[in-house]
Length: 214
Image 1 (cartoon, rainbow, N blue to C red):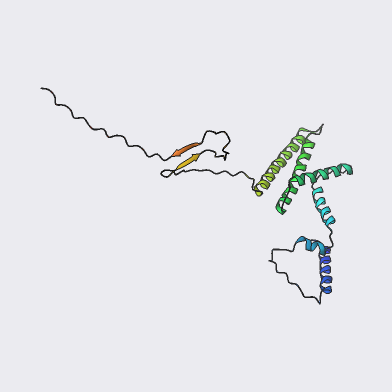
Image 2: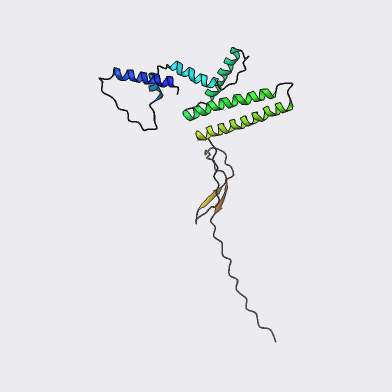
């Protein structure tokens, strides 16, 4: 935070303290690692909701690369498109909001590398470098998407079963188990492992040899 902003906050706080000097001082007990809601500081610095939204818009707009000769109308279209992509991710908390903003910047940078790789009359090395950077950025985007899905609890979980113990009279199902309605056609049931104790073989009695005839 800049020194001018700190001085401004101190001055506003000082004026508020003087105006409420005769009033009973309210004590706010907060842990050392926590702050008041942003709305409280927004009212102190005189920041309106429109100013706050414009600042968030500027954060997303600065993620996009604009050529110095790009017309303002074209830049505005790209900014609106970036906002559309950000909203399509539907972030619901701070972590998702920050990640969604990073994903918008990564996506735009990857497209810019692909556009530069498609430019005519360029060297093989230049095209190859642009494609490699695009590949790295697209890989990063997939990792960010996987992180977002994992945060939302959509990551695929894999369970490996190494040993199966079946007690007497029990059964263990091997394979995928899907819940089905009773009116659906019956499908082949998964293989089952049953506890079948080994059946003892019948005893074989030795036959008595008949006496040899003289």
